[in-house]
Image (cartoon, rainbow, N blue to C red; front, side, top):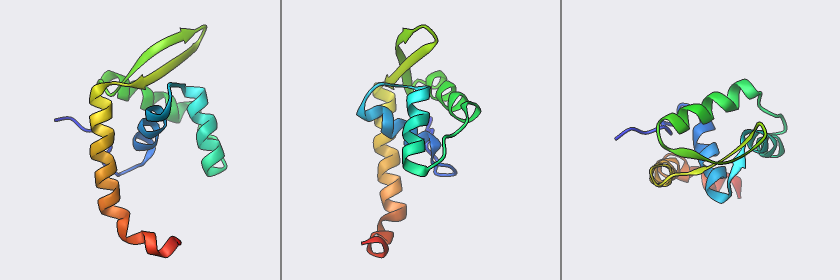
Length: 100
Protein backbone atom coordinates (compact mmCIF):
# COMPACT_ATOMS: atom_id res chain seq x y z
CA UNK A 1 0.00 0.00 0.00
CA UNK A 2 1.35 3.39 -0.94
CA UNK A 3 1.60 5.95 1.83
CA UNK A 4 2.34 9.65 1.75
CA UNK A 5 2.80 10.64 5.39
CA UNK A 6 6.09 9.07 6.34
CA UNK A 7 6.91 11.62 9.07
CA UNK A 8 10.12 12.81 7.36
CA UNK A 9 8.18 16.01 6.98
CA UNK A 10 4.76 16.99 8.19
CA UNK A 11 3.49 18.92 5.20
CA UNK A 12 1.52 16.10 3.59
CA UNK A 13 0.10 15.12 6.97
CA UNK A 14 -0.97 18.70 7.73
CA UNK A 15 -2.49 19.15 4.27
CA UNK A 16 -4.53 15.96 4.68
CA UNK A 17 -5.65 17.10 8.16
CA UNK A 18 -6.75 20.49 6.83
CA UNK A 19 -8.61 18.95 3.89
CA UNK A 20 -10.35 16.51 6.24
CA UNK A 21 -12.03 19.52 7.89
CA UNK A 22 -13.26 21.20 4.69
CA UNK A 23 -12.44 21.49 0.99
CA UNK A 24 -9.72 24.07 0.46
CA UNK A 25 -7.63 25.62 -2.29
CA UNK A 26 -3.85 25.76 -2.21
CA UNK A 27 -4.02 29.42 -1.28
CA UNK A 28 -6.42 28.70 1.59
CA UNK A 29 -4.04 26.02 2.84
CA UNK A 30 -1.15 28.50 2.67
CA UNK A 31 -3.17 31.04 4.68
CA UNK A 32 -4.13 28.46 7.30
CA UNK A 33 -0.51 27.42 7.70
CA UNK A 34 0.45 31.08 8.08
CA UNK A 35 -2.03 31.38 10.96
CA UNK A 36 -0.58 28.30 12.63
CA UNK A 37 3.14 28.82 12.17
CA UNK A 38 3.49 32.55 11.58
CA UNK A 39 4.89 32.42 8.07
CA UNK A 40 3.19 31.58 4.82
CA UNK A 41 4.75 28.71 2.87
CA UNK A 42 5.61 29.45 -0.74
CA UNK A 43 3.52 28.29 -3.66
CA UNK A 44 6.51 26.17 -4.62
CA UNK A 45 6.08 24.26 -1.37
CA UNK A 46 2.30 23.75 -1.35
CA UNK A 47 1.46 23.08 -4.99
CA UNK A 48 3.94 20.23 -5.55
CA UNK A 49 2.55 18.62 -2.39
CA UNK A 50 -1.01 18.95 -3.70
CA UNK A 51 0.05 17.57 -7.08
CA UNK A 52 1.71 14.54 -5.48
CA UNK A 53 -1.31 13.88 -3.25
CA UNK A 54 -3.67 14.13 -6.25
CA UNK A 55 -1.49 11.94 -8.51
CA UNK A 56 -1.43 9.26 -5.82
CA UNK A 57 -5.18 9.37 -5.27
CA UNK A 58 -5.19 10.85 -1.76
CA UNK A 59 -7.03 14.04 -2.77
CA UNK A 60 -9.16 15.14 -5.69
CA UNK A 61 -10.15 18.43 -7.22
CA UNK A 62 -13.83 19.08 -6.53
CA UNK A 63 -14.37 22.55 -7.95
CA UNK A 64 -12.66 25.25 -9.90
CA UNK A 65 -13.38 28.94 -10.01
CA UNK A 66 -11.03 30.61 -12.45
CA UNK A 67 -7.53 29.59 -11.36
CA UNK A 68 -8.73 28.58 -7.88
CA UNK A 69 -8.98 24.79 -7.43
CA UNK A 70 -10.54 23.29 -4.31
CA UNK A 71 -9.50 19.88 -3.09
CA UNK A 72 -10.98 17.26 -0.78
CA UNK A 73 -9.87 13.89 0.53
CA UNK A 74 -10.68 10.69 -1.32
CA UNK A 75 -11.45 7.46 0.53
CA UNK A 76 -7.79 6.53 0.05
CA UNK A 77 -6.80 9.90 1.55
CA UNK A 78 -9.09 9.38 4.53
CA UNK A 79 -7.51 5.96 5.15
CA UNK A 80 -4.01 7.43 4.85
CA UNK A 81 -4.85 10.25 7.27
CA UNK A 82 -6.16 7.73 9.79
CA UNK A 83 -3.00 5.63 9.46
CA UNK A 84 -0.72 8.67 9.67
CA UNK A 85 -2.58 10.04 12.71
CA UNK A 86 -2.10 6.73 14.53
CA UNK A 87 1.60 6.86 13.66
CA UNK A 88 1.88 10.50 14.80
CA UNK A 89 0.23 9.71 18.15
CA UNK A 90 2.44 6.66 18.63
CA UNK A 91 5.58 8.72 17.97
CA UNK A 92 4.70 11.84 19.96
CA UNK A 93 2.22 10.74 22.64
CA UNK A 94 4.81 10.74 25.41
CA UNK A 95 5.44 14.47 24.83
CA UNK A 96 1.94 15.48 25.99
CA UNK A 97 3.08 15.80 29.60
CA UNK A 98 5.72 18.35 28.61
CA UNK A 99 3.14 20.73 27.17
CA UNK A 100 0.35 20.90 29.72
